[in-house]
Image (cartoon, rainbow, N blue to C red; front, side, top):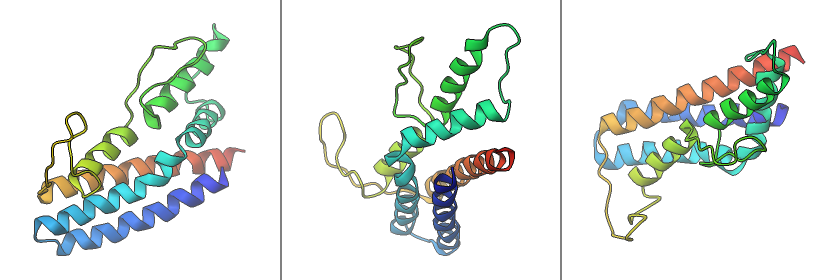
Length: 164
């Protein structure tokens, strides 16, 4: 748990620096750089999504975010599904719902920031070349969504740390 919180706080600092860049940004290249910074901040979560998902499942259970008076398995299943909707890799497979698919904010934001920065310069399906020319609204969207996302994860893990 401590490693996750430490990692998130470090990535949050990167996002705070991106806010300063946004204040000074004036051209598409500046906005693309901010979006690339968001993608870079998401990389550690993307690369450790199973570990983060396990932490979130633990937090949901220990903090009593879901409860069931009648069906004990419901807490386990709901915790897995909620965690998968927060941190995932497009699919969750467990013994109860092996076809259930969730697209969490980490996937949506990672894909958006990858395609609007210089990380991808071709389309996925047909490998057609393109150059993204984001505007301020695009950089604001990526940055503000990332800030909200990281703050939620940090608060969840802090609450778990205080309880355990």
